[in-house]
Image (cartoon, one colour):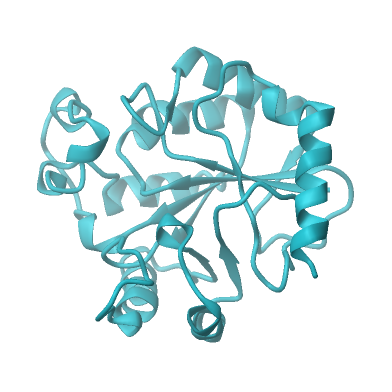
Length: 239
């Protein structure tokens, strides 16, 4: 079984988890699952793939230390337009913005920098993937799909000296044509949608993610009724 999990923040005003609950959640995952990247070998057993959208700076300061503590792997989905090479601003300033203000204040360092990403890549616990260039709903009119798919990949590969094979759809939005174009550039793709899989082949080539923001307990999304619901949705969506 493979369960893909979607996160954004800890200790923020929206799309977030309480830091104490989040650490217990990561501990639970470390004790009950193997964590993995899409590029890892064929899966056997129970696996979890953790995906953190948007690369907010709290990932570096609050989440990454917890991943290291429990030796848990995660993907960091990066919208490249908003990423600085480095940032000299105080941590308190960088982390002071509410969720809805982070994109418009990106020049103040509200996202992880490329230097911080290099450090996290070196841990072998964090894999950087594309979350488009401008973090725009790809179904909107006049979208430059080449920029969102290809430019974002090129920036990440050039800046970080890595190979990027995974794309996370902004807002989970796409259509059949966009999916076809995406898979010409990336081997793996992720959307929003509470379903689980046997491996990264997903459903019709696209991986669904279980929403893991707003947790009230460490293990609530792993309870048997929830797992049964995720499996049922995967079955329905496969037709």
